[in-house]
Amino acid sequence: MDIEHLLILIGISILIGLSKGGLGPVVVSTVTPLLSLVMPVPQAVATALPLLLIGDVFALRAYWGQWELHHVRLMLPAAVLGVLAGTFLLTSLPDDVLRPVLGLFTLLAVGYKLLSKRFAAAHYHARPWHGYLAGAASGLGSALANLGAPPYTAYMLLQDVSPRLFIGTTTLFFAIVNLLKLPGLIAAGLIDLSALRDVILMLPLVLLGVHMGRRFIEWIDPAVFEWGMIALLVAASTLLLLS
Image 1 (spheres, rainbow, N blue to C red):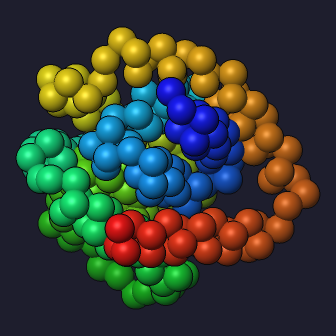
Image 2 (cartoon, helix red, strand yellow):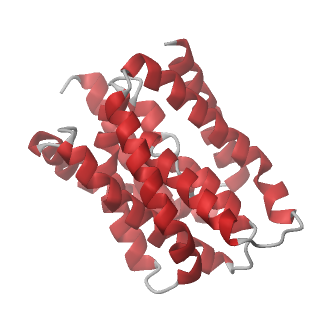
């Protein structure tokens, strides 16, 4: 592993910990674009996945039982189809096609973040197909680029759930989606023993990120932090589009 690869891996391990420590999905959105600056997109998705699964364990422990199963049941079948389609595209398309696709997905994540308050304030009438669509889009985005949060969150912001149920439902849904992605990436040869060894080495940094995230919540201005992450996303997506 070269020094550039190692530094990026250290950085994304801490970022995943920060997100699971309470700083939110915008942090996770930076992981795959940053990794893709030093490796092919399929390898970046596969490298991030075991670290995300470790983060999911910590998040599930913190929010166990605090979820709304109705929305998970509504979105999950379509999410399975989205994961299958996303995995097929990830393992079939050449990297010079995947890089601009990832750049566009990243810009969509930025656009969602900028419009999220409008989603929350919208006058809304729930329809089952909204959940199907959100599930399919989240599964596709997650499998293709680990960027499934924007469509899921846009849907959940329109539902009448408390903040704690919102976070708990998000935790459960993406823990399942991340597990669904694992067999396809293993079958494609993108996750092997050496990758798992690197993940084990990074585990203390994920734990450190979780601890830092809990501390940061108490003193950092969330708006300043989120704008910093948005700037990082825009920079990474621009580099991906130009490359």
